[in-house]
Structure formats: structure tokens, C-alpha cells
Amino acid sequence: MKIKKLLTQLPFLMMSAGLAGLASTAVAADIKLGAAEALTGPAAKYGSAIKNGLTLAVEQINAKGGVNGNKLVLTVEDEQGKKEEAINAFKKLIFQDKVLVLFGPTLSNSAFAADPIANASKVVVFGTSNTADGISAIGPHVFRNSVMEADVLPVTTHAAVKHFGIKKVAVMYGNDDAFTKSGYDVFKATLAAQNIAVTSTETYAKGDVDFKAQLTKIKAGNPDAIVCSCLAEEAANIILQTRSLGMKQPFIGGNGFNSPKLFEIAKDAADNTVMGSPWSAENAAPANSAFMAAYKTKYNADPDQFAAQAYDAVYIVAEALKGIKLSGNLGQDRQALRMALPGVKFTGATGKFVFRRAPSTNGKEAGFDADQEAIVNIAKGGKFILLK
Image (cartoon, rainbow, N blue to C red; front, side, top):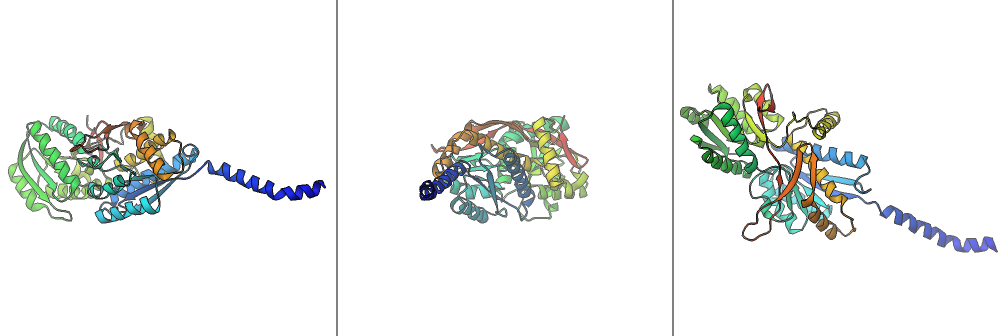
């Protein structure tokens, strides 16, 4: 009788055990992170470093048990540094992959195009390399830990002026890119505020490789330095062509200069280039030393600013997630992350970090910028060192 009773109850016991097992495994779930970065095309030098930084942080966090026992899963799409591709990548990650949060895109141009999609969908979009003015004004779901050029360039310019005794400069910038145009606007205002005369202002367009016409005009003005709001590859070629014309003036640039590509092309010709950034390879703080060592071990290469900012961004999101009890309702969880992020205080590879609410525009609620100090560097012997 006992055996017969046991056989009768067995299906119910097995079902109960199965349900218990499902209940226990349901506690831990994957946290889906999405990234749209330029992995091919001219901006790949930035996008590849960003992907490396994101991946390294995700792997480290998962190796320590994830976030509250939940594993981070990163999906990366190649947006090629193009507006249309960034829009398509965002749509895929938001609506098809159903990620909790988005990182990217790589360039400010693409951010102006794609970020409104994330904001309208009430998904946090976290820029790790977008520094143009106005991006965070897109809406309250737009965050970035890339320090704005408006915060960096005045500090950089002041340091360069003091170091070299600069009285007058020439200015050169790309006139068809949101990042380089925004940088020019900041430089223009900064030079006026610091009473530095401008001998001439020259422009170029994406894809240009011959800058000698502009540089010949600049040479005629005999400036003490050349201010350049450029991305690394164009900056390197401009520097080389400047030297070929016998010009020895130092350059002053934004964080677009902060890439190994600058030295791969310009080599020692880039010496005396001054650049501001929240990150420096010479920062010996424990968090940065640990990041640099881990990056070197994994990729057999030295990291740059863009890898460091991406790495920190994942940890900033993880810090916010620690205080959230995920419900499994994607809309609610996305909103919970949005509400938790502004309060995060974090010390990472780029130093101490907090968010700063961007000012509203025309009564429209804005997002959050990085509130972080700039470090001024100078190029010596094919690398950037601290300007002392």
C-alpha cells in the first residue's frame, strides 16, 4: 500500500521539485547591455578601444559574481561611425535585443542622430566618447561620462598659454562634424576670454588629406601656436604637413587627439602638442594602475582615454544596479536604472566621478553630464605625459 501511495504521489513530488528548481534559478537572470560603436571605418580607432573597455569591465564584474548575482551580457553592434547605422543599431538593441541600457555611439554626430530614439523609448543611453555641447539636452535618459569640451578646453588652453608664453594663435577645425565644430566654438570663446589674438581661422572637411593651402595661410600670420579642433587622424596629418612647411609651432587640441593613432602617423612631429583629458596613463592611482595592467594582459596593448571611459561606464552602471531590485518588467527596470544613475559616486580609471544635471533648454528636461576635472598632457617622444 505504501509503495502504491508513493507511486501515486510521485508525479506531484517531481512537479513540485521542478517548480522549486525553476523558482531557485529564476532568482538570477541575465542583465542585457547593448553598445553601438564604430568598429569599422575612420572612427574605428575610437570604437574598438571603447568595445575593449566595455568587454573588460563586463568580464571582471561577471568573474566576481555579476551584479547581485545577475550576469552581465554585452551585445555590441558596429555603427561604422555613420548616423544611419547608429540609428539602426539603436533600434535593434532597444526593440529586438531588449537591452536594459545602451552605450555609445562613438561620435557626437551619431549621438545627435541616435540618442533621441533611446530617449523617446525611455532607455538610458550612456555616451562614453561624446563631448559636443548639446547632447545631454536631448532628454533625461541621456547620460555621459565623457567630459565636455566646454569643461576641458579652457583649462587646456590656459595651461598651454602659460607653458609656451603664447600671445597669438591660428585656428583650424573640421566644419562638417558636430564634435569638431563644437570644439571650435569652445576654443573661439576661450581664446577671446583669455585675450589671445587669432591670426587666422581655417577649415577642412571630412576626408581631406591635403591641408597645405590652409597651412600656408596660417604660416603667413606667424602664430605662436596652432589650435586644432580635429580628430586624431586629421590632426596627425595636419601636424606632419605643418612640419614639412618648416613650421615648429606647438599644437593645442581636444580629446580627439588622445589616441595612439596620433603618434602612429605623426610620430615625434607631434612633440609639444598639448591636450586635455580626464584620463592619463601617468595617473598612478590604484584604480587606474589596475585597469591598465588588466587591459595590457587581455589585449597585449596599452589602453587609451576611450577604453578607460568605457571601462568606467560599465562600473558606474553596475554601481547603480546594485541598489535596484530587478522586477523582470523591462519598462520598469529601465526606469529604475534611470532613477538610480544620477546618484552614483564612483572612483575608477579616470578618477573621481559624479554626474551633473545638464541645464534645461526651452523648459525641456535634460540629461546628465560628467562632473570631472581635466588633466593637461603634453606630447613628448611619441606619447602624452603630464604637463607640469
